[in-house]
Amino acid sequence: MNRIFSAAALCGLVLFSGSASAALLDFTTGAAPANPVPVGDGISATFGTLGYTLIANPNNLTRSEAALGDCGGILDCTIDGYGINDDEVTGGTQSLTLKFDRSVWINQIYFLDLFAKDQAALDASNGSANADGNNIETAKIDLFSETDTLIASFLFDAVVTKQVNGGFAVFDLPGIDNAIQAAKLVFTGRSKDGDDGSNDYALAGLSINDVDINEVPLPASLVLLLSALAGFGVLSRRRKALTA
Image: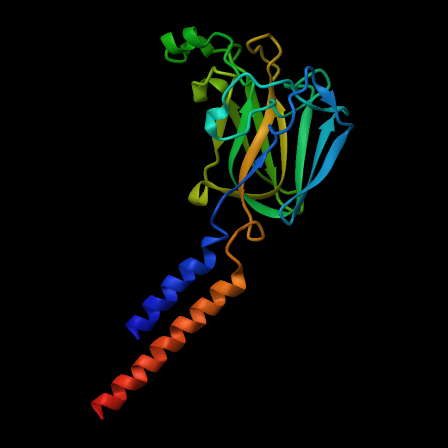
């Protein structure tokens, strides 16, 4: 029985390993525009079998300017990603709403142009130079369920990342296995000064887990599980025959 349980447990790991692998939704790919390129009020697209929409408020979603950072080797980083109107999501006045057609596990969110106004001063003062919040750009992230129930809200400051090359920043979500399940995300900011006095940023991408976006087909794993159990059944019968 112990051996059969071990085999089932091992196959169970194989069974669910596909759903545990993260998929990268990269908004920084494509030809770099010389200036922000309007793409309308929003976009509707698919990612694997997952559908999503990205809507700008107010209006005028844009593909942002050519990226200057290296995106930590995670993203393509040809452009900064998505913003609104003149370039990026400006705190206090604008928002981006990313909605999936089903709940997914969000692991990480990536931003570009999320700067500290004076990173050197912040580092030298161990953050005390940011007492009034005016020295950093901040992304506000709200996560919602499929029924539009607010799940969690976060304020993500540029100073946390210590990244100034292109303002690339990675927000690691807390929660079970560093992930939170959500169907909608709303990105806003605070009305504070950033590196250029506007407190804005570009949405560069997300790392998500979704059972339908994986390379391990579920039926094949199920067959593997049943085959292993059948094999141990045959082995058990042979041992009983030898003992008799």
